[in-house]
Image 1 (cartoon, rainbow, N blue to C red):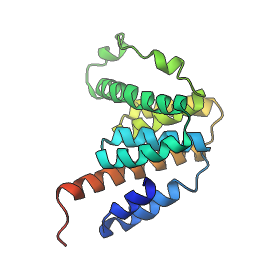
Image 2: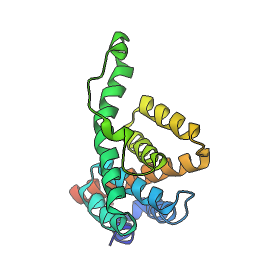
Image 3: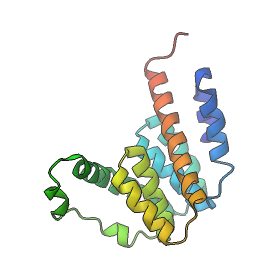
Image 4: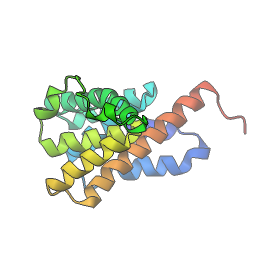
Length: 179
């Protein structure tokens, strides 16, 4: 179940991912809640059914119900915010950036867990979703709260590996490699 099962499902051509998944979930500067919240948020953001099923089950063994809800909330809000703010960044007409977003985001102010944890999870989802504007905002918030670059890097590493695992497993399940 969980990490072990995903490592089994990864094809031989993704041996590095197999090793990376094991290391990012066992050797981290993130505390247990931060790590497994990052894993869960990243799995949701990565949109891979098998990966999410496996990692969610394992994450729930490590997270309180409140932390699991907050991780899901971070993924949900970043799914919205990352599209919105990435689009604002890409549009040539910068007037859109000065307009009120008009999007409800109350959970960001009161996520139900430590603000640093929620910011790490939002950073991870933003990394998976590719929103530079959001990445910068979350990184600045974390650094302003005294979080080290190494901890931030660990959250990004977790997100990148979980995303790569999801992409690889889902694509391999759809079209198994013949060579």
